[in-house]
Image (cartoon, rainbow, N blue to C red; front, side, top):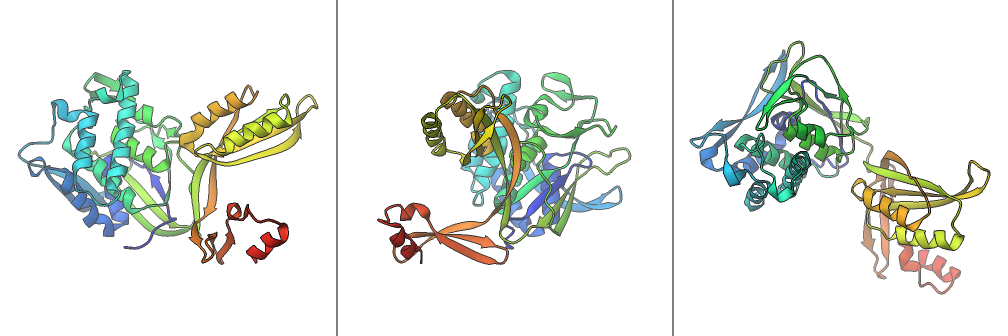
Length: 388
């Protein structure tokens, strides 16, 4: 299989986003993944539930792929305890899936469950799925997980999401679109009103989009060499536009990757140098912290201040924000969502037992000894001699 590490994938929700549209679009762009994905779907579905069908057709004159579940004798609906989050997660975990599929699929399912728990104000283990409990939704979650596992270390972005209008039928009655779980999952994302009614983004589609983009907004589209295009069609016909989700795949500069980090910053004018050093030492060893910088500046009243800036991974933001409030005197934090370009890197051990960090630069690999391994050097001359 082609190594697609470092590729950037952009999703255009022209008609909207649903689980089947995502899977179909990705398999249109990467047909070599089809056998893996179909095997994982068949592993998760009992034969009585039906079989997956992936076909090629047209939508508003555009060649597309469509994924659907051909119902078996049990039909598509599921009921009772088998629709709980715990039961559906256990079903995925018990299946014989391709490497990586289980963790990706359960992460997508977890996003939906967290949203449902928030909407209904109940604990996670009491969540019952309704709209996504059917076999075809489980098929979509598993297939999306299989695709994500097959495309490691890729970056993702998504265009503005179509808002739609009207109401959608749910287990709790008619509710306005986006459905409550969809809105909960996609807080912080950009939406547009294109005037086309109906439910345009489903909860399963929302969870997949949030999963691939990290759950912190649409992400930044990265330019590069266009490698593949795929279109997945939905089941409805929309007035005036094709009901498709399109993916465009770009090969980025060799060795370069992108990720999203959160910058938290504050200015401090009422802590001693010893206190700031103590706080910085605590922060530097925190899980999820990627960088910490201290610098000197002048505040609005002309007083000298120490500027403290940290870069953290998104999932550690709340915890490290709490640490900043507990360890410093600051009353507020500035927050920026940043996209980084980073080089792929690896660590190798030298014959002498020292570790060497290797970075993959566009013009060739570079390396240097791990600084921590040189901490015991008795003098600067010895340290430089070891480095060579």
